[in-house]
Structure formats: C-alpha cells, structure tokens
Image (cartoon, rainbow, N blue to C red):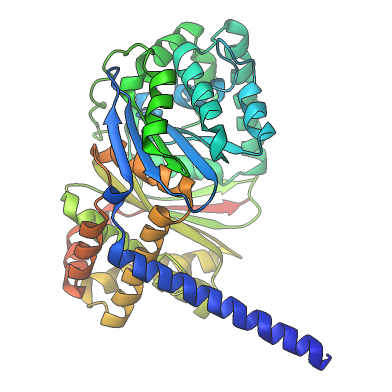
Length: 452
C-alpha cells in the first residue's frame, strides 16, 4: 500500500471519527436546549382535524404525515385484515386522482412516500421539496374526502393481499410464529389477531364493510396532520384550510374494545415442528399488565439493558461470548394499556436453542436479584436519550411521525424536557424493583421452532 493511499485512509478515518463525535455533541447540546414549543404551531379545524406544524428551515424539504386513529384493533371479528386492506385501498384513487396516481405525483416531483398500519394507528407520509407542500395536501385531502371504493378495487386489493400472505408463508416461514406469540400473549381477537389477516378473513370482507370502515375512521376528527420542514406556519394554515376545512366531520369513533384474556393457550412453552423452516428458532414473549404510566420509561430502559445494541446483556452473551445465536432481535411493544417484550433468535441446533433459553432465564433472574451497575445503567440511559432525541431532531419525517404518534396516543405533544429530566432520576433500584414486580416466570412464553 502506497504512502499516499495510507494517508488518504487515515484522513477518511479522522473525518469519520470527527463526524461521529460531532453528531454525539450535537445530540448532547440539543438535549440541553431542545424545546418543541419554540418552533411548533398547533391548531384544530372546525371539522376536528388536529394540525401540528414544525418550522425547520435547515433544508428545502417538507414532510407530511396524516395519521388516523385506526388499526387492527378496529377490525370486526372474522374480518381480520380490514384496516390493512384500507391502507392499500387509499392508493387506488379518489375523486380527482386516478389509481396509483398519488404515487406518480409524488415521485414526479422527486419526493418519497409510504404508509404503515399498526395495532391502533395508520400513517400516510410524504417528503417532498418544500414548494410542493400544496400538492401533498391536495392529494391527502382528496382521498380523505372522496376515496373511490368499488367491488372491483376491493376485490383487486383482497387478491393482492391473499397472494402476499401465501408468498409470506413460503418465503418467510418464521412470520407465522410472530403472529402466534401475539395470540398467546393476547388471547383476544381485538388485541391478538394478525394485522394482515388471513385468506379466509380477507374473503369475508365485503364492499359494504369497507365503505362503513372508511366513513367511520378515515375522517378529519379521527386524524392528525403533522407538517415539518422549510415552511412558514401562517402560509401552511392557509393551505390546510383551503384543502381540508370543507371535509365534513365524521362520526365519533368511540372507545377501543375492552380486552378479554380469559381464554388462554394450554401451554406457554411449546415446541413446533415445521417442514418449511431450515434453521431452529426460539420465540419468547411476556405481557406486562397493571403498570403505571410513569413506568413506561423504565420498561424501555429494561429493553435497552437486555436487547438494544451490541453492548446489551443478551447480545453480549448469546452472540458474542457464547456464540449460540446466529441472529438476535426483539424489543418492547405498546398495545394501549399493555406492553410486551419479545425476543426472536436463530441457532444452529436444538442444543443451542435450549442453552439460549437458559441464558434468557438467567438474565431475567439477574435483573430481579442484582443491582444494575451505574456504568451499565448510564450506558443504557445515554443510548435511550440518543435514540429519543434522534427521532425529534433527526429528519423532518422522523419528527413528524414522533409528533403524530404522541398526539394519537396521549392527546398531546411530547414533553421533551420532562422526558429527559425523568430519565436522570432512574436508579439501579428503580430497575430492580420493576423487574421484581413484572418479570414473573409464570408469564414467560416460549415457542421453540424446529425443522422436520
């Protein structure tokens, strides 16, 4: 290697290190001064649409998120997949926009777009040059006000989703166990069924079901519109009023279904033999009930200690030290008044699966019997703070999604100073106390998946 090449590589490495240090410094400084209220405008239209505007002139871009308070929890029984079907149907044309033309309009101006459905929310989002904000608002208002729903389009989307489900079962055989662990943790249709539904439940959905669902949930008073980017609030107000104010208010969506977990699976430790899988796998889950709202942050730190990042306990033991897991993933999931922690791993054989299972139990017991060291807790706090602030201060899109999610979940915007202040108050004893109350062995659920 020539001296010139070595010098170039050395300089690139210096730049990379400087960039990472600079990013960490920016995040640290932002934590001291970041306040949403200084750049945020929030108001509500007469039809109930909540509007949040965040001014960020750093780049000539704008992101728009329209989020509806509807998800798989709102699927009628025996018609699982209706919310997911609606997400796809929203791209099939409205009064002034042809099928899939929404996508073409955005891509033709150099923008990006996507959509997502979760347990209780559905998001539609775009990022475009800031001078194209009017185009996005026109497109979103048109499908909120006048989506085209016909036998042909509903039938077309149903067939697409059914074919996707068949392919997923063949190409992603482990996915069915992600759905199965949900059914074990949440043995209730509203909370535990698979978001995409199945062939049978999708075929049960009628055009009348779709129209009723759309008119009930895809209405301005069940939505939040979040805009972040190089915009001026007053100009955005005018555009939002022009495109959304005339859309009629819909019916109130009502409360979420009450959970009924009386029916339970007979076994919380199952072994499944599956001819479609090629590598043994282990799926773990635990549902947390009866916790206080202030404990959510503690559960998140528990996730960071166990799973989040290469310095987490399970990653270090299962992947780095003992080399049992070929792949390890998981995390905390929020379902209204419930939380669940899930873990998924792949291993070479059943012996390694059994040893991995033992280590998971050992680490859970450690959390219940030993204080987390100050160094380990500090590392988890810093990573949590970095990820939290990255959502708020990263891209316009990440900020929009965070603000919309917070508003639909809590009815208010995130209180960043309070979140960070509460984080500093968490002690090792806080984690120990939480673990002792909630990591109960009778609630652990294991599924071992073995190839035939």
